[in-house]
Image (cartoon, rainbow over all chains, first blue to last red):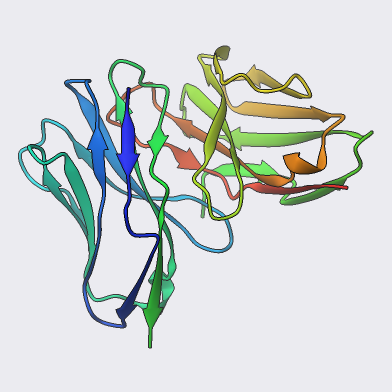
Length: 115
Length: 113
C-alpha cells in the first residue's frame, strides 16, 4: 500500500523568505515518482516538480526544489523567495510502478505568504 | 494556461436532473482521470481510463457514469445526484508512465440542490 503524509495543515511565511513544506511517504514499490502540486483558490491543480526514486540529484524547477531523502522516505518541497502568489494549498503525491495509474495524495498544506 | 480543458466551470443541478461534465486534452496522453474534491481535502480518485478503456473504478455510485469517446475526450454523466455530491470535479491526464505527472483541468464546481 502507498501512503503520503503531510503533517503541516497550515503554514505562514514572510514574503521573500524561503519555506519548506514537509512530505513523507510509505511504499513497498521499489520504483516510484514523487510530485508536488499547487492548488490556488481557483481550484486548478498545478504540477510543480517531480522526483524519481532512482534520481541521484534533487529536482529543481525555478524557485521550487525538492529535498529528497530516500532513506528517510521524505520529499520536502522548498520554495525560495516566497511571493504573495505562492499562497495556496500544496499537495504531495506519489505514483508507483506497481499500480501506475493511481496517484496517491497527501492531505495538503495551506501556505499563506505575508507581505 | 492549462492544457486540460473542462466545461462547464460551474454547474448547479437539481436532484432529478441529468447533466454531463466534459474534459478535453490535446497532449497525446493515454490515461485520463476523474477526481472528486471536497473543500480543504485532497482529490479522491473516481475513475481512470487507459487507452480509452476503463481501468479503475473506485467503487463510485452508479449515478456517476464515465465515458471516453476517444483519446482526447472524457465525459462524466451525472444522474439523480445527492446534495453530498456537491464538490469540485477535476479531470486529469497523463502519460502511461510512472515518471510522468498528471496534468489537471481547472475543474467544475458542482452544486446539487
